[in-house]
Length: 539
Image (tube, rainbow, N blue to C red):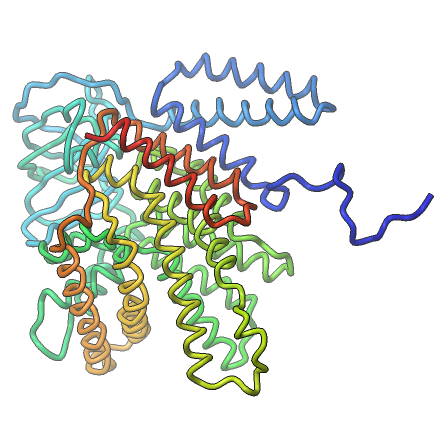
């Protein structure tokens, strides 16, 4: 019998489409299970019985690959749904007459408002009774407490509407069913941890550091602070509206751009001074996690840090870790540690956009950026600087358009559902603002590196000023495009769950056609899905 070529694949032993990303077998069932519980809650005991049945089926059919895979997915879905239901505060609607009350509340998040006269946040009610374990949205006057403390508070309690709009819709997506307005702190029941207090004080100091400029410009300093700390509440109202309408508000969320930039800068310094990379890599990741904690542990920053960690571990262990594998692991870890994140618009937008970039934008850019006949025929030594510049510009524009189009297309169902607005113009505006955003990002990172040394503040002021100038230019561009009619699609979803459901269908579509070599197919089918959703569910 003739021996087959060692590099030749046999059709029957080829790895499955996602054999290079086994973490999908963990992330997708958990994602589907927690999504199922969000759309249609099933009693926990029934979910546990179904998971035991699926586990038994898996054991019996362990030698049958197809049936065992189905059983494995079913186990993940049922356990994911049960975990989500157990961890999430009670979600059934309560009819509550608005009244003045006193409650004991454990503070989960607290953010100072732009005016500095009070704060908004989320907390869990710890008083035994009808409100026990309910998550409540807080609107409080006075100083901002640190995360993790327990307070005795007074205020006007009321229920969040069954179908809320605006800010109430966002807090409901976080698991809140009640809101406390005109709140006042009566007393402290339990102190926050020293680490939580340190994070709060550090955030305040960093905000002041980044807002210090050689000239008087409060709004410019707020822009730079929002960029580096991920606090969109600091943005001037007009600028925030312009960035939201042009689909570029994501530039002010702590994401892979921040984490990767800081990691690259620290690693560059380590290599320049010839220090050992492995132990210092652990220190760098620890510093980045402190940065994530100080900036509020947003879904996008958590995703970026976990992805960076897995990629670094893969490089250290000399094992190649794909971006999709790292993303799937980050998703699974986040949903296990914080199952309520599945309802967070930030979590949904972050992961859908990154999946679209990985599986649609980047492959399409690679296909379209194949060398032209001119590039192939002209020898490297004979190429002029103008030719090389023209080719690089072409690749930059094609890559930027593909990535921006993929992320915008994937985000339309969610942005329309949660914000009643989606921007077509975001494709072009992102192409202009994303490269520009790297300048204030680098300036802010350098400024943060100077933070431990107070005598370097005068130098940091001018670095902050350079970043602010670019941010003012970006704001002017966003405001210009926001005024152009016809660039925004506005509407509300007739069925609120349809937006996240459409996002799930898009993820499945991206995965199914991940290996397609047709740009028309990569973009066309998702566009058809989004268009059908708009026709059916948007008014």
